[in-house]
Each structure stands twice: as C-alpha cells, then as structure tokens.
Length: 106
Image 1 (cartoon, rainbow, N blue to C red):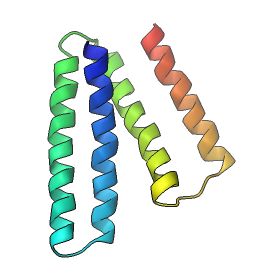
Image 2: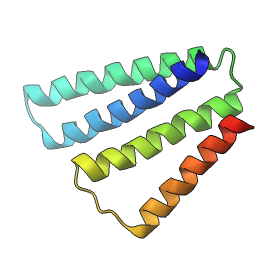
Image 3: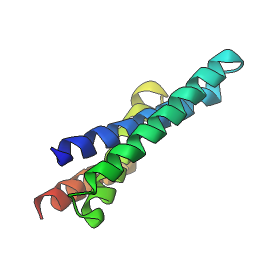
C-alpha cells in the first residue's frame, strides 16, 4: 500500500511542477489559482511522502519520489510546454527510469 502512496506522491510532484509552469504563463487571478494549486500539490505530495517513509526505507522512497517527479516533469514539459525532444534528454530519462525500477527491485 505504501508503494501506491509513494507513486501518488510522485505524481503530485509532477502536478506541482505543472502548476509552477502555468504560473509563469499567467497573470492576475489565474496566477493566484495556479499558485494555490501549486501549494496544495506540494503539501499533499510531502505528506504522502512522509506517510510512505513510515514503512519504506528513506533511501529508496525519496529517490523513487524524485525520480517519478523528474520523469513526469520532463514528459509534461515535452507534451504540454513544447520543450525540445533530444536524444540526450530521452537517453537520460530512460536511464533514470531504469534506476527507479532498480531501486524498487532491490
């Protein structure tokens, strides 16, 4: 169950980086709404990470959480913010995914 909580926490990390990206593009009320989304996502993500580390080793949970966030953020950047897709980015994201899987397996 705590692995599911950790995955949700990682997805919320992607959510807060998405909200952060949207605040860069907005102004006025929209800026504050994205800001509220950012703060809410950060709080939920951190709380779920803390919950998951009650039974999972911190040395595994934290890298998996950040890895999910990093991979998800790069994918969101490519798909929604039209960031460049280069061989280097895809190569290193792939190695990061393999590393996350390795931490889960060990």
